View 1: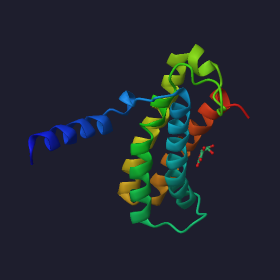
View 2: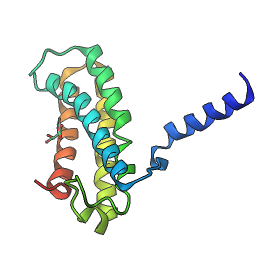
View 3: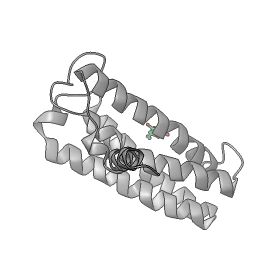
View 4: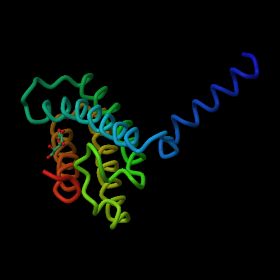
Length: 150
Ligand code: ASC
């Protein structure tokens, strides 16, 4: 591998490893980024939740794959809640910026619950998965109730 490719690969690797360092040219880009991340997370968590609820048949491999993606993506959206992104095409409430510690704690709660879901999904035990999915769902809802407009 030549040197500049190596440098590029390193930079790309760091950017992927530290999503909090995501950069946005305009506030709208940060809003789009976080919405996109929430959309992807919801799609993959939704498949796991549907299995946990019995809405679709349980498939251990699909559960594990989707939980893995949802867990990874759960790290991303919060980098998009930068200053100046409380307006425009967003349902984010101003409390996100006036009580940042609480918002961060709520985000961490969801991310921790997602990590547990990921472990549960790998276990292949549907009852463990059910409990873990319930905890994730509560964390999602808790944040929506407090920090998302209708
Ligand atoms: C989901 C999803 C959410 C949460 C929430 C839980 O699957 O997309 O936003 O669960 O509905 O109450």
